[in-house]
Amino acid sequence: MQRGGTSRLSLADHLLQALVVLGAVALVAGLAYGIYSGLAAHNIGVSFDFLWQKSGLHLTEGLTLDWTDGVALVPYESGDSNLQALLLGLYNTLKVALVGIILSTMLGLVVGAGRVSRNWAVSRFSLAFVELIRNTPLLIQLFFWYFAVVLRLPPMREAAHLYGVIASQQGIYFPSPQSAWPGGEWLVLASLILAGAIVLVTRGRPARRGILLGALIAAWIATMAWKGSPLQLDMPVASRFRASGGLAFTPEFAAILLALVVYTAAFIAEVVRGSIEAVSGRQWMAAHALGLKRGQAMRYVILPQAFRMLIPPLVNQYLNLAKNTSLAIAIGFPDLFNIYGTVANQTGRSMEGILFVMVAYLLINWLISLFMNMYNRRLLARGQR
Image 1: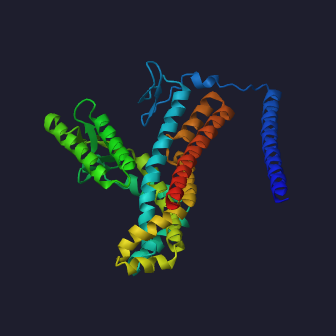
Image 2 (image 1 turned 60 degrees about the vertical axis):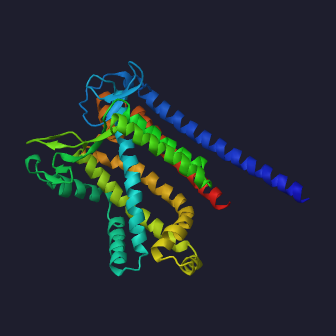
Image 3 (image 1 turned 45 degrees about the horizontal axis):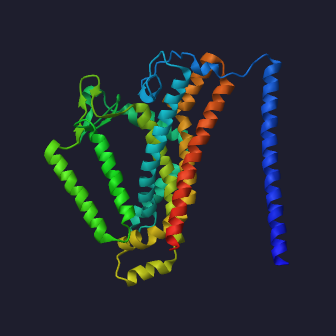
């Protein structure tokens, strides 16, 4: 009887899911038909031919795809198509989102750990940071970073220099690693991948791991003795009106990145605090009983358990950061949404353009969710061993 009841319940669940899917498909189809009929009534057709028309835009920040001689990332030229302009905007959006996710995670972990610190000053400062940032609109913070901070930096002839970093109204310039000989950057990347593979394959076998990593380090030393270092630092050099060399952050890119990192880090900090406090207090007692100091207990006992609860809400913050990059239009940064507006104004194809933008953001958020869920499943599987 129980088996039959379970099978009937499973069948009912599948029927309900099928009805929900059919309803969603019917809703989307109905909306699409309504939009198409409305456009047809005004003699407006749906066409994506505008994507192949020359845009005539002057875009200097970012890269786009060129498929003339194979697929390659190249600087944008005014004779390129509207599709290439939108791809440049997508490149800039991805660049801000990726760098923002990394930096906001690092800052959020630090502030979140500060929230549970026993040091009164650190705890209160972290609390003040979180409350101030979370209760201030992101757009206001973006204007603050752009108009009150970045554009208030000194001009290039009076630029501030700090450990090779140049900060001015024209942008912020950082030392950048460059290939010292052909293929050097690929050698570095291949070595890092190989080192990661060695660590994964030799898990639980420290002796074999030590031998393989030692051989990799010896090969590196021999290579550098033969050809020198594969990478060298390209230091930025300031002239009277601009700087050359190094890695350049334009004022707009620096402002949107700062705003997104600080804003998202405040929310991540609360997620981190909640995850740490959700770990049983007995874990602290067990760590102290083993002679671990508070910092060691946090690193080796509490945080590994907190991470299992941290990932799902962390995904939401990453998705919010990716979507909030569209606010860059407020300061003129050429992200996807900004370039869409310009292309739509020139071609009159606002509906087709916004469909392109919606699909692009959907793919970005789907990829973030996919990778984070894969990582979460891996963490949970490791914890069950």
